Length: 182
Image 1 (cartoon, rainbow, N blue to C red):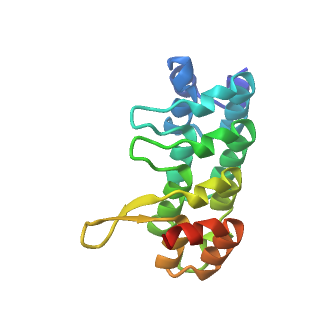
Image 2: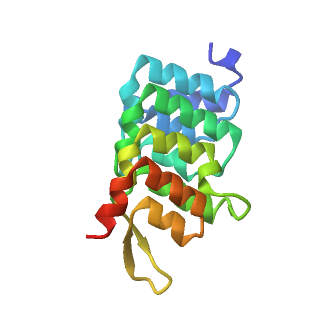
């Protein structure tokens, strides 16, 4: 069956050699491209808790996908993961970061998002809608002089000059604005 999904023998061996609970991590890290969405859906259909398992750094599969560059394929994988395991959007890693925090960092750092705001990113909107409460959770970032700064997601968006995203986030969770004034 796996060969019919377009997996090479090497990819099939990598898939078979992984312990069950780290299956999705292996699927995402092995660079399997063809049939990846079908493989992810099948794994999560049979065991949705696979989407909650964290690696040694506390990263769930959603954290891993949040780190990847923007692409239609990646957005589709995030949608599959969230549809089968929505709670993964609420998991923090060992650094206390949510998938939303990582996706926002990735957006400005890797995707070089000068042309349009985060709000236009399907990846970030999907993760944000899965865990709107994340808009009221601090993220720890380092400033230019390496001091730790604690910002709500709307503050991070404003810091990057993304006013549309700042507005949309405050509109979704106005309490975050009031919490920030305490």
